[in-house]
Image 1 (tube, rainbow, N blue to C red):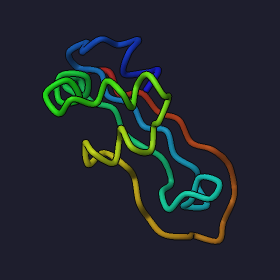
Image 2: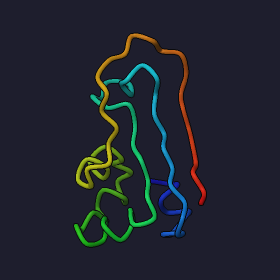
Image 3: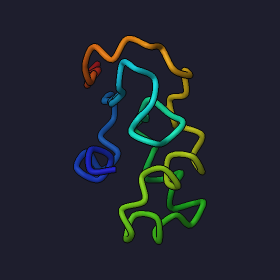
Image 4: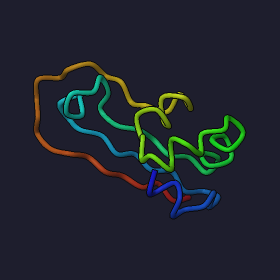
Length: 85
């Protein structure tokens, strides 16, 4: 959520934060993706409460932007990427 808020809908910038083991702690997802329209879609869906509570799971789940791969049994590292075009 912090990346989405920092980018403020910057055109041409996408981000991905995920864990290579396919899960984030006790959650069922590897991470989430951020697109230029993430905040606009969140506002349209009324997700401000998720932002206030730092509820990234609820925020990205409601947007359909969770990365769900299932357990990979690798646990190599965390993965962060930005695509700027």
